Length: 187
Length: 109
Image (cartoon, rainbow over all chains, first blue to last red; front, side):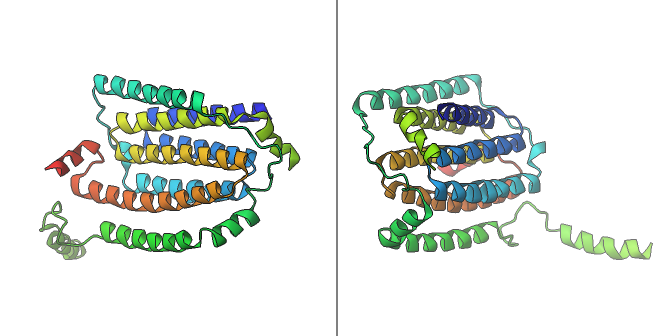
């Protein structure tokens, strides 16, 4: 069982590094899919079955597929990314390492978690999560629907193409297209 | 069921802590290093997921379903955030013809 944990942890860390280091955004998204699937494996290992299913459906099925759609629709593979200067990159890696060390040092002494002996194995099942969700957390659950509605309206309003703000298109592009139509048909 | 649940008895909680800290640090380095905005969004997702993993581990070790409900809400907020973030990205690509983070420097003034 411990080997399974280490295998999943190695997959998570390596694919997370691939996400950061890959040149093409498509490769990053595919590595992130693998990373999230391994995290779902961790959830199953912790017997959080409901969250494992929701994680696979929401992240891998919805969010990452949406990202793949956006990358492919915007033709983002052809864009050459300008790299940050070397000093910035080295400093970023040093900062990340320092953060890791500080988090480790902060929890090394103060964290003495004793696992209770008579603990409940069915805490992550659908029944328990549903009871907790609809009894203790009913108000946040309903408020999150308002959040979703506002996010949906906001996304539509942002991505809607309206003629007034789009300054990059030359104003003469539309009549040119209209003129080209009859000429082609006449010729 | 019992075979699966032996993970809690065999793997100590500190291993989940270290794994989650490692994922969070990698996500932060990625958000600092890269200039492509969609990869920065993906690194934010990675950081959110490391916190989710830690919450699920604590919740399972303490037999408390509240932590897993919190993870559920974090997933809801992440879905809404990605929706708005990707529409901002589409808008940025349409108006500036690029997905470079440094264009957003102009928002400072």
